Image 1 (cartoon, chains in turn blue, brown):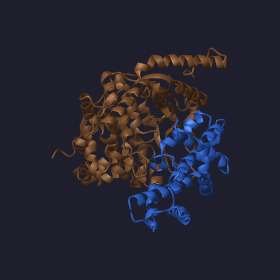
Image 2 (spheres, rainbow over the protein chains, first blue to last red):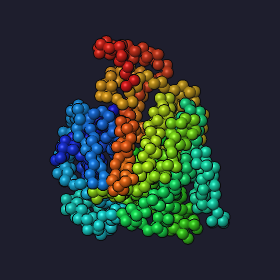
Image 3 (cartoon, rainbow over the protein chains, first blue to last red):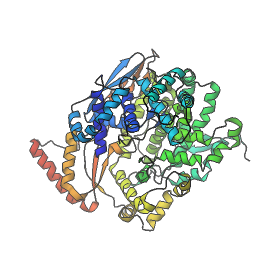
Image 4 (cartoon, rainbow over the protein chains, first blue to last red):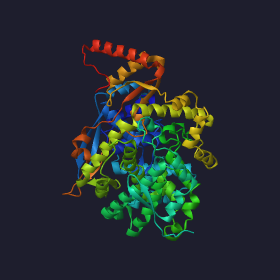
Length: 185
Length: 439
């Protein structure tokens, strides 16, 4: 296990215990990793690409599986109306991996605090939407596509037509207001 | 011009006959696709399982066939979800089936020689992350295959798809829009790629580990409406949970018995080492317009020619002489922190004798545990994970095994050191039952 592996694994219990509810779900884990890497430049080495449920990298779930196998975190399945989710919490192996990645965690403590302050209150659907908007925005910037609000909102709405245009606009405005979009003039 | 409406059939050892239309046949005839005949699906796995000589060519045809089965099943069984949540019409669903077939056909066109084994030699992008073979596939679709996709009469008269539409699906670009939903069938947790390679690799390797009930899978797969504001996802109806379980178990068995077989992994090490000597600058050309032509010249034949000419350094010689590295020590499939600490101790004692360390969690064949949504037969609004139905899936954990290799010349010396350390550990623990690799 190299240093980056340890750092990625150590983040999982830290995100869970630092979250206001002291646990996170799988969607939150995926999107938090995406936000940390994309918005704060935390060097996690993930390679996200776009799916209908937003940016995704199977390596995040592989890391979660490894963290569960090593008792760094535990996942409990929780049911709710019409569906289910997971409650990821620190387990007995968490202190050890946190100790091993101590300098990384200290260096990025402000990034984690920022992340949970900005996104810790969003549910999984809202996280999917926000991360999709940011992904589209970054792709526009990389491809040097001239972008504006109607164009970006329109593309996101085409990817996620089950969201109303108003809810996409609300999420877009919120991200723009926080200065998190870089392609929009 | 050939008859545009003719259907062609190709025999497949896994699926029987695979049907292609004239447009698909034209794509298959392109040099960029024919190159896949010269890229083995499982690299040097034939050194362990001699039958495993199959190529990405037949796998790509198989994925197109499988994706059709799955797509048609979902479109027919879940048309309400697809219409209400993704805005599809019946006509739109029929149209997009053709696009998904072509994306599936071309999903591996960007593979490097000997498939995954040499991908670690892909260069890095502007963000400092390695390119992936999907990005090479997308780039080849946009360049070498653009004309046959954009301008084929079957396309222009009936669909109007662009090469960009195929590329966007392959690389996961936002240009794919609502069609991103289908990306899970091409590159996802329950994709046609995995379903085909498990069956095909199993068939050619001569093992039964990768077999599962594909017919039942396609008979029960469906689109599930998202909850809590999330989009739709793929899952299974309750009657299909044993088929879904079979798929998960097939993946587990194939990983432990074939993909992460100790000798197969050793040959991946040697191939990577030899290729880094053979490739100019030790890296493949980038997936950029100016470099793609050079990338496409690299196939298994070219590499074998280089090896035959004596190039590839020490690793090239080991490949040519079947004188591979030997597994000296491994941690258990599910390694605890204590197991990994003991492995570190062994590694330290072996010192320079360790020539390579390989981790299951880094394998191209992902080791994470998949949990699949299952829709209740009694209450269609109730969705539960497969792990709620299957005791076996519930108790599965990710494989985080670590393998330590030494050269064959040092194998005996390494064994003596390891035996001594195991004895010391038994004494420390006060037990004769300590067996570090067995848990």
